[in-house]
Length: 364
Image 1 (cartoon, rainbow, N blue to C red):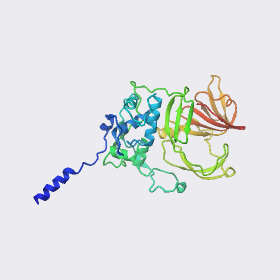
Image 2: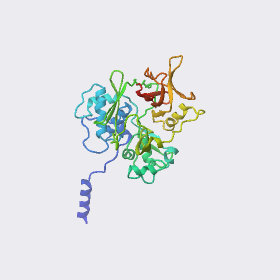
Image 3: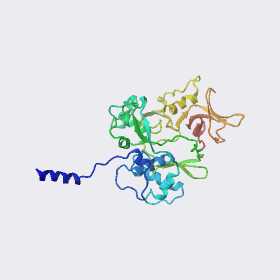
Image 4: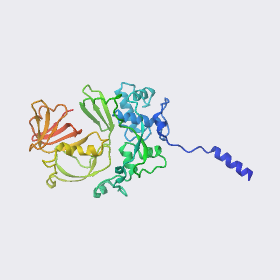
């Protein structure tokens, strides 16, 4: 019996302790030691680097505390924007130092779960096939945990690691989350966003680059480039059935069915007594972490007021939206069948417009 007891003690000494997930202090105080972690475990320094990248508009994709493909792409793009040497090892001491200069706000903060977070509705089971999702009334999250993780751009695994033992289904519960949108303070006032000159989409690299007026890289995002089942002709009109899915942007979907344009019903637009700007801003108010939303506007034209400001005006004159920056001269006074743009809550950025003689690009 004594020998057996001694053997059990020796075995207990040889068994390594279970991996403990990172806590808020470990992430907030994380330092880069000069070498990126080689394992696939959540690493405090990588969590910190991913959050700082996200704040700087160089998206690492889902924040999961691991140095995956999207995180490496974002680190290389960030290095390029800072004029640093882009090496085979994406995270270096120089890159780490540049990331730290982007802000000093805590990377992990406390968050109190709200009634809205746990209200739902939530899906009992997510269909395995994309075409089966079109029969759902709405493509909701599967659980409060998934919804909260998506809200803060983080993986469910990281959310669980930061909050061991918590179920995330009780309003009023305080949990730890990543801080991708730090609050503006008098010591660190919000900086003006640089003007966007053009957007480059690289299908091969699966990346989106946002460039400024001087060609400088000001934002970077990983992209999922899908394959088209049939060939689309520019300007072609058709009726499409969309399957919406959870995303950082409120409008993201896959085309799961297609029909001829003759079968398409006219889209419903806000009635004249409803302010179009207020209607478009509702999604931003509902999801305050969203910065802007894509919009498709009905028939209208670009108008210039006496003060030299540009406005989009609906064909019946009932609705107007202020335009950010300047529009192409060809757009002014031109009748537009449809206008695609980005609404920020107070300004419209025109991406493209369809006129009666063809498509014309907007402005940056």
